[in-house]
Amino acid sequence: MKVKNNIILALDVMNMKEATEICEKLEKDLDTIKIGYPLTLAEGLEAVSEIKETFNFKVICDYKVADIPATNSKICNQTFKAGADAIICHGFVGQDSVQACADEAGEFNAEVFLLTEMSHPGAKLFLQENADAIAKMGVDMGIKNYVAPATRINRLKEIREIVGKDAFIISPGVGKQGGDVKETLTYANAAIIGRSIYESDDSQKALKDFISLI
Ligand code: O7E
Image 1: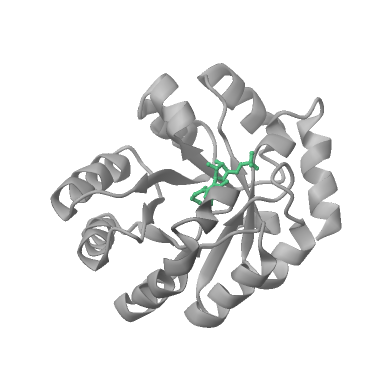
Image 2: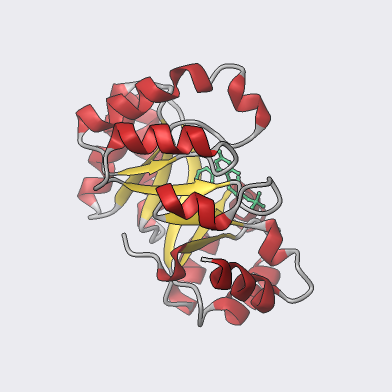
């Protein structure tokens, strides 16, 4: 995946009006957005189709898919039917569940991102000790895209070493969660940024400020 300016906007607003206004303001400098549960639960899966139809964005659906294979397939099927270019799935559920997402993505010529370690402090409790194994599983499965934390650069670096230089890593946690955009992009291909942009009084300037730091 190619991401303009190496920044993906996390569009975690709660209604289409706000989502559309932000996209209009930022569409010159962005070409990839991430839609998760906040907007989808507020507005339905149509939010994905509507954003795809209105803007020339690639849409990554952040549904952190983490179920049995049969259910994962159904979740992915609906998401790709709505027009998503990619979906994010959890790795801790194991190879069969991740494979179900990858298989469904293959049917739609879409992509899967494998979530390794999360960016929040709580991820240290259970997820961190298994994150390397999750990344290794992804490599063995031929997964090309990963999510790794901008809040712990050493971990981002270690996960990059596992998945290799040709893998595509997107990294959340820049801005509000404390991660630094430039440092993050030393190891990640793109930074995922949400509140620091969409909660700003001037979201255009907030985005441009990040771009100028890269
Ligand atoms: O902190 P913000 O506002 O810049 O938003 C960060 C976004 O990335 C938000 O949508 C959150 O749900 C997501 N995220 C994390 O913050 N940490 C993670 O470990 C993983 C994600 C995520 O996007 O998961 C899949 C990429």
